[in-house]
Length: 167
Picture 1 (cartoon, rainbow, N blue to C red):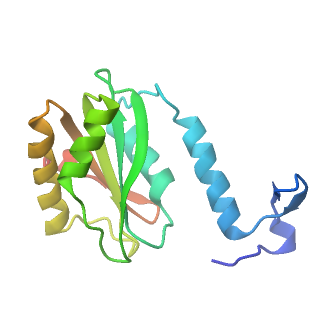
Picture 2: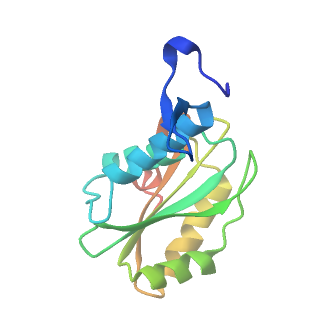
């Protein structure tokens, strides 16, 4: 990513000294992620698969490393908390079900939607993606938390494993 956008496309951010300066590409992406966080704040409902796919696409697209995240939801599927739980390399992230369960208990959630990105741009679920989905569904069920979906983000495209009947 170009560190400084061309002048005709310049966006500005406030520096630590509270003066405006031309934003780098990374600062623009970070500001965009903050806006997404405000758009889907605590209490926002996940009413359909499109909402979940759009949410995770906005949060995870464009990242250079694989990031595994979760949206912790209440009994009405409203957002309690979003957390990026694991970071990996360009082609994988190690996911520990006990850590997902621990976070689910801490947030006192009733349901979870998980998601991760594929920096390669592919949205086709791998065998490992399907296996971790099954492991998490089983582990979460032991503490009465429902796994609603697993969203895979590749570039600006998404795949929902629930739509394929794999959750």
